[in-house]
Image (cartoon, rainbow, N blue to C red; front, side, top):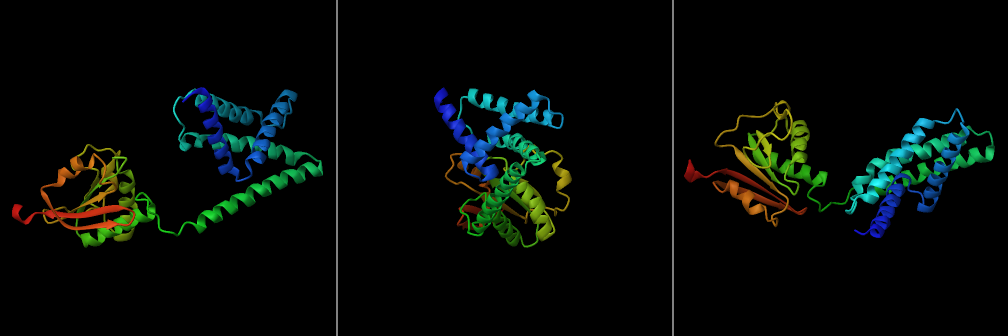
Length: 271
């Protein structure tokens, strides 16, 4: 990206982060933030004792240094790169509002209360809108509801017996399924898979993993193995799937997410 492209893109991302924090109009929140910075600087120059100088300087320094780094960084920003800016930006505005509330002028205090009210009102409105759209079924395989539905299917097909689960996910490491089988599976069905991994016989990639899996059942040759597959079209899939060619599929389901789950057992001819 050219310097001009970076500047434009960074401004857009920062504006979006500010909007997500307050849900006020971008012009309004930018004005409040700018005034907060200017007023804070004046308070420090004048040596106002009650002003939280250290909190202000740390927040401002963190914000400015981060913005400088983002301008130097040559690649496009991902939205989660700037999530850390939420804290200093909130502190800057909060310091400004708390200072306004200490002023004896009624008009200024009313203004401060109005800003706080608008923050709360628009924030709650945004959350209510989010909750309204929470119920429709998502077609994202990584959606929590969809993953729990997949886990339910696995346990129902396991029929109370021991089983292992191997997941093919874009991230390779299946930390999400590790957690969900440990939390949801244990809570709902009372026991845990004998193994959860992205492939069999992999080095431990979760620290002290053995401590977590304390409600497993003994895995035998008659136990089932389940595959959870999020993207069959990936060029990695044939190699991954080839690890299970010696097992025979007993049942397969393709969810509307889309996600495929396969139940495997030892082939009769190999027994």
